[in-house]
Image 1 (cartoon, rainbow over the protein chains, first blue to last red):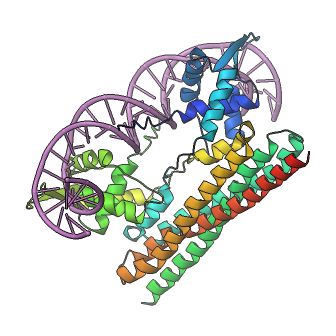
Image 2 (cartoon, chains in turn cyan, purple, blue, brown):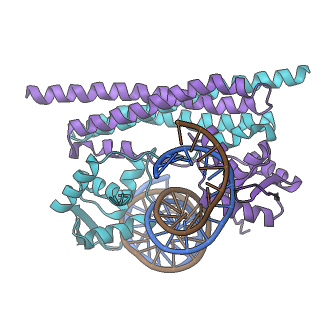
Image 3 (cartoon, rainbow over the protein chains, first blue to last red):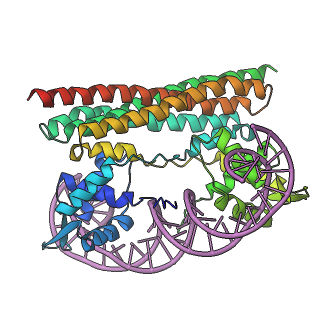
Amino acid sequence: MDQKKKRESGTTAHALLGALSIAPMSGYGIRMLIQQSIGHFWNESYGQIYPALRRLAKEGLVEKRTERQKGRPDKHVYSLTERGRGELRRWLELPAAASVPRNEMLLKLFFGRQSSLKVNQRHVREYRKRHEAAGKLYLAMMKSIPREHAGHPDLPYWLMTLRLGVHESKALVAWCDETLRELEKMERKRREK
Amino acid sequence: MDQKKKRESGTTAHALLGALSIAPMSGYGIRMLIQQSIGHFWNESYGQIYPALRRLAKEGLVEKRTERQKGRPDKHVYSLTERGRGELRRWLELPAAASVPRNEMLLKLFFGRQSSLKVNQRHVREYRKRHEAAGKLYLAMMKSIPREHAGHPDLPYWLMTLRLGVHESKALVAWCDETLRELEKMERKRREK
DNA sequence: GGGTGCATGTAATGGGTTACATGATTCT
DNA sequence: AGAATCATGTAACCCATTACATGCACCC
């Protein structure tokens, strides 16, 4: 019967609505918020944010208030309208789309035979470094955020998403160690022959 | 000194070169290979593959041989040229680019306060189901692939990338369980009040 | 008769990053 | 003196998915 699936995309727009559900903010502010809080699993660039905010304002989902400032461009502070909050809620209830995230390091390792053991080890070590650092950061944030935002009603949800980062980075570091041992074993075997 | 960073993109092209380093294949075959082996961390659609193979052929990195078939379109079997293999090796040595993978489920959970506990639980449960199934698949593949490709020189690398899937899905399932408990606790608290 | 697998491709559309462009203030 | 922070935005480009278009063979 011809069910047009309609794709329901526009996640960027909904991410912005979500950011504004926390507090009214400028485009710049949204960028900062995203980087500092959900930067490990989400990103938006200015090239997306500014045009999207305009569109949302035109559609009546957000409201713009302009603040004049000394020595700086005017600040456009956006806030959610009732309709905007409704649209956010509607979207939140929809099942989350899964996507295949591209992992270039794994791609290179998959074709690792075409390269050398040294190169493969380097890739894994770099990956390990990255995720070890990330893991430490998440642990630090797990302590600092409850202090800085004590009693904030969004806090429990923020901590949940952070905790996923903790779990994930631990798992990735463990995988790196296992894989590095395996690569060393391969190296030893090659030498023996 | 004007060091144009040049961005060195074209990962799709290099993924194709990598696929062809395993064996000569058609565009269709590459798609199948990618889905079955690295589908958990990489994807390429026909809309990318076919035009990219043409470009690679024009650049002399791959060679096309046409096989006629009965009742099917001609099959274009591509294989790596020496230059293609060189280009693949060169790319493999370059550090792997990190990317922020978008996780829509986490995004929704981050704004979870705007929604209901029920909805948030549903999201986490769905996520858990997905990754539990994935984990089982990876474990099954860890057994079947060494049998099916016993002695294959690429095998150790394939298993390494698979193992990351195993580690990751375990971690994600553990996080889901922890988070579901947390959400239940919040629900109980809400009822008590 | 209908679904799945093999096999090719293009065009429209949508998403997203990066580079460019500007400029005062404040911290080191 | 120079870097970082605040603050706006556009345009060019790259990348990627999806829908469309075609069609035989084989199995149930």
